[in-house]
Length: 173
Length: 123
Image 1 (cartoon, each protein chain N blue to C red):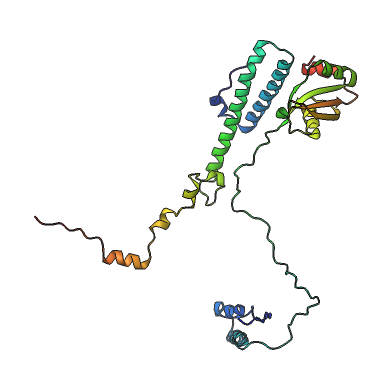
Image 2: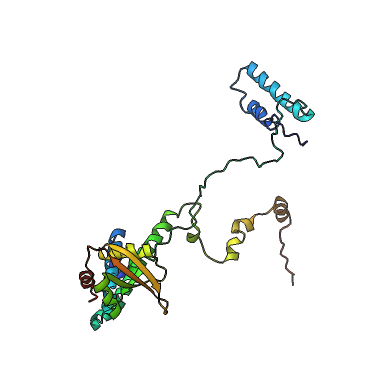
């Protein structure tokens, strides 16, 4: 096909199909009109159009890719039947509290509890987990990774909690 | 605590199972604390049983979930990939039995006109 890229050309099949698929509905006058239109469109394709009516105005030197239709995803089936459950839930996050002498000192003096947590835990996750597990308010969490590759979390309790009471409740003392 | 048996678990509903899972996990937490604070030997021995009970509950949950999903997708044309046959990669890409069976018109004609003949030699 000649690279004309004019608008009437792509619409050529449409009027022809309209005529072919709907003969019973139109009156005789309508059918004749559709036929004329189809024949004209055919002539345009065969002979080629030379008019300038529908020529596009190019305002820039560059040719930019025209924006086409982007459909959202609508899969026929989910790729995975179930999504993975969160294996790192609050129970897996906090392994156990520390009961060393320095940890005990922290409970009494600084109102903090010391836990060994999972290495993949981060401070906000630790805060949430401690809140849920022991029903206490947490002021802040500091973490470090021990030389034996375990994560230690210093969990400072809110000032309205007493470290010793909470430790008793958990069972540390 | 009574021993957790899979047989009893299978009848339960999902919420009950999840609740039981929660209880077992909190128990496991307290046992771990006891381990750190030098608990009684009975407590330390219990850790093993509780761990295995947790495993049992999770197994039952996942098994029933998978089973229900398979039932749901049984009649459907497109299943999730983990519910399809695993076989091997090559077998999954191989031609289906139907595709192997189809013949062109030419071949059908040939087979009809020139079937394999069997002869016997007369003694």
